[in-house]
Image 1 (cartoon, protein in one colour):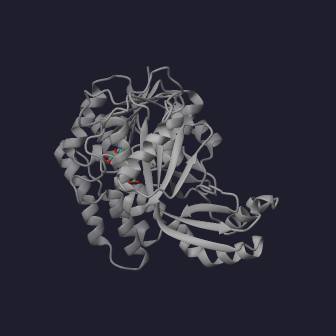
Image 2 (cartoon, helix red, strand yellow):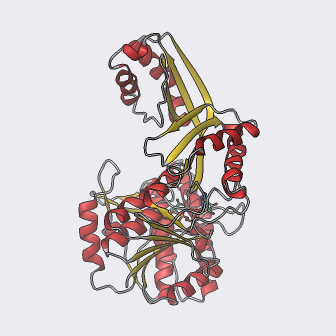
Image 3 (cartoon, helix red, strand yellow):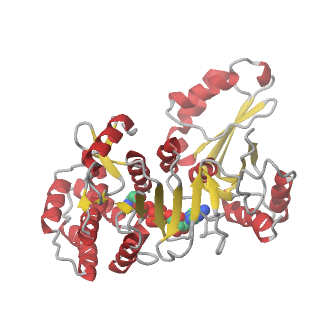
Length: 439
Ligand SMILES: Nc1ncnc2c1ncn2[C@@H]1O[C@H](COP(=O)(O)OP(=O)(O)O)[C@@H](O)[C@H]1O
Ligand SMILES: N[C@@H](CC(=O)OP(=O)(O)O)C(=O)O
């Protein structure tokens, strides 16, 4: 039995947390491949080491002195090393990091050092072999994972190593420079390692007892989802349930390796199991609710639009030409609305509007900003009549104005657009109707 265990920053923020992690690993001989993140927040308002590194690198880029900032980061590690009573010094590593920051080695290199250093501490603490992912996880120049080379090299590197620590979050480009995944990407490293060694299970240890029905920062103490499918999780992760990075699902799905999300602070809890498919009936009609703020909508009106062949394609071509991906595109008879990320749209707004005028000569274009999208996800929704009705009556009772509705034909999810300011109220209303009231 082989398990890959990933510990998030919240699980590794201090020596005390490291000790809990050590106990968890030692309590199960199959926990042999460990993927650590960088130390996270020790308390509310604390700063993650990754953010300290980004900040320090920005200062280096501006030519400011960084010795003080580097010292502060080193102190975070020293506190852990001392608390664990390890005979380990990171002076050489920090001297090299400072030199490379000043030589402008890149912000990916900078951010990756959080995991690199934590990997050294973890390997020393556990007595496991340190494996640097810069030597065995590779990216293409466009930033996508080079799967073929990565799995080959990782398998080769880990062959014959029974117990290894592989830091999360980074690998390298073919020219040898360090490249990171997007934020939260240690989850992806964990899945890649699990696939490469053909693990029986990928355990993802964090600070909550599994995937919760919704974000615990919005609803107090939400119910835990015991079992969820990859598809449902992908929808929820993509829409903002940050407990697992959305890209962590693909490598495991290809191999059918289950994921178990667990709580480092409550190892007795079973957590959430994520599987390809299950006959296990969900506890509620819906499995989960997630969402994100910060969208804008571009509403295009034109009489007889629906008889103009190629209208939709021409509209989307304008977005493509401006390098902007769209999130949703609900349409009426003579209207079509495109939802995009507001921050990306703002930079290109005028180019897109003029592009649309040239491409489809619309009668009118209306813009709306500060919108949020909420996904209500569940494999059980297909079997239950009236799910959409319940959602919209709950929203109406809570005075939430619904701006958009989009239900995919898979009936796995319903996407709802609301104003940013109604986001939390809407999520609480949907949670209450399905979970608190158990409808
Ligand atoms: N549906 C959800 N279920 C569980 N946690 C969620 C959900 N939505 C958001 N979160 C947040 O995700 C956090 C865990 O993810 P993250 O901060 O990346 O942890 P880690 O540092 O362990 O990688 C939780 O503390 C919680 O606030
Ligand atoms: N440390 C990186 C990568 C990561 O996955 O961290 P965490 O496991 O704490 O979400 C970040 O902050 O983005």
